[in-house]
Length: 266
Image (cartoon, rainbow, N blue to C red):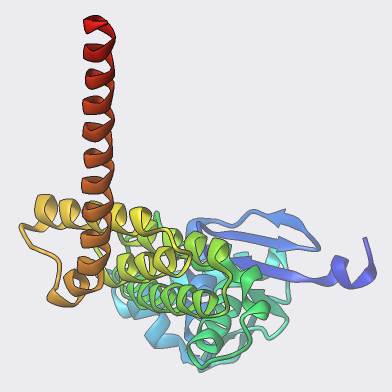
């Protein structure tokens, strides 16, 4: 391990809370974890009183401030490079690398039209939710904000890859978007467009049928008119192909029967 690796402090909030120093996991009590996670998601200095009130909403101001001081002390005892603190404000140290910050930055770059190649390494991050097992009110809000950002980024990346002719990658990213939100019609749309761009009309129609079934079963809704228009021609082509195939099969059956009848007469 290099000296830089040994000094690196990393905070993972996607898929769950993991703090590591020099790639070594560091154990923290729940209150210290929540202080670090809250500061990591703010990306700015926050008043001590605000942190205490949000993290200990049912406690008195004095008790909440005491709990906050205890949590900070316990965190700093494990690593003294985690929190920048003074008498009025708190902030996460700039030395701490936070995965959701990196992922959010990449998501914004994708949405702003940055180069596609640069962002494929972030696919796993964009496929993960923020602190999925935490249900504090402030976490729920932050999780939904990131969830919407990553969905938009996955859909945009799918469209960009489709336009670049990288159909296999586009399909994978489109499926990631649907796994993240199965009832999101726009996620189904970009995947259908990727299938069509690859010439896979049956796959496109099958995905539309899955979308329609999900919307009907879960929400009692039909797909939008725009999505129906997108697949209407595809459905007609598939239906025509099926009709032609059926006609050919019937024709072969007739010919076979005629040959058999002629042979029996002889």
